[in-house]
Length: 337
Image (cartoon, rainbow, N blue to C red):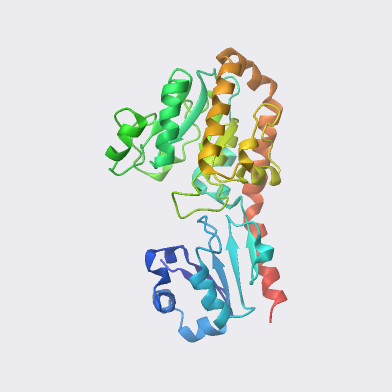
């Protein structure tokens, strides 16, 4: 599959997420990778040198620090002739090169089938919380243990490690039980992972979304909104996020209701990761004590217009994101020489 394609003569679109490896900072690696990518994409090195470059990281949550070895090269070889498309770095005006951020880009995943999903508000709630921790990490293991022993499976529908390809032994003692914890079985394909129509997932009011971005665990340090956030909105649920600072504010900036009158999202401004996680744990306990399952059932009916408005906002992004990216690329094309 080509990673460099012609947008038009004189402009190339370069999908470069594969650069994010330990080798990236090895001297000469990025230059050699550009040559390899040109060869396998049928692009001559001269055409690459002469073209404007749209460097796309739309499908991964990387920021400028992670891709600096590559952009440093382009700053030398293509000054004023390249731009970067991010989905996880919002402060683009401070960068030394043109860039645009489309935080809601991953809504465009075809697996969602948003236009075909009709939510039934008459589904009876059987849990207060939903928390699907399919990819295991240390922080998620601690979250699973908290939910298991402080909230209980009678109040939370919980999974852990259903998407793992082995290696769960290291987390068993942390979670405090045999793994994986399964709701929908061991996941074998992406269709299962993006299943939003399953009634099990729609019978909870609060969605504890453990987002991919983390200050300590992964490559993704910036605010990276993935299907974990969007599925909560698709399923007409109230999200509680476990992620990096500022994530909730970014969701608000996109125009979504975060139900601040019900959920105290002050954890979003806590910079220390351990303290922020504990604040989220305390919040979940408070909500669990405040609302019975019957209360949650009643609350969902009261919030029906707002939950539906959130979904309609999601549909707007689903239908317009690609056009916005196209316009950004077009504007860059005509604003540079």
